[in-house]
Length: 208
Image 1 (tube, rainbow, N blue to C red):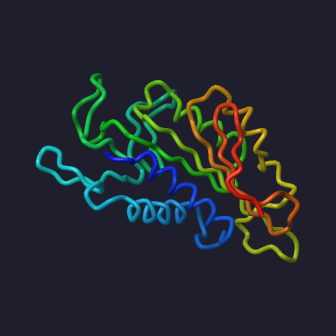
Image 2 (cartoon, rainbow, N blue to C red; image 1 turned 135 degrees about the horizontal axis):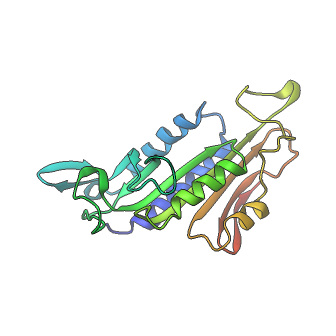
Image 3 (cartoon, helix red, strand yellow; image 1 turned 90 degrees about the horizontal axis):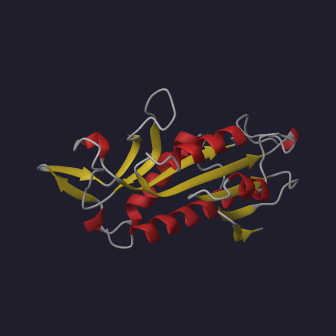
């Protein structure tokens, strides 16, 4: 699939920048998944959106695609957003079924989630049996408080769930995953911006 990795990463960056500028476009994390899916679909060239397999037309982007392996969990879970490798392929140990395509990329999202959720996503993505080539995590914070609180789904600037970019860097050290941190804080107690965190560096994409 031509330039798919670049398209995915550019879409994630654009999405995170839009989130900090317009953090209330989507009410829930599920809405965020749908909104991102739409953006990624529109960013793909027409010829890259589908492929044929076993006389069946399949979209490369899937919501809640099943993991190829339980990856240390009691049973197989699902990826928030996944992009199937095209032309399609299978891990040689897996059945040639719709359920087991090799994934070019998987993207996990977290909205106002803490360290435990982040670590769980990283461990699943980076598991040797994940059957995912490119691994991404989008970790978003929407913060407001007091009389200026916008939504009951927002978290307080004093919340223990808030993890700094430096803390995330220590968590993903030596892990094959790119984490995009997008943070909006109406109270201005925390910095507002987007950062890409991977292995041993923090890249500032935008701050305001």
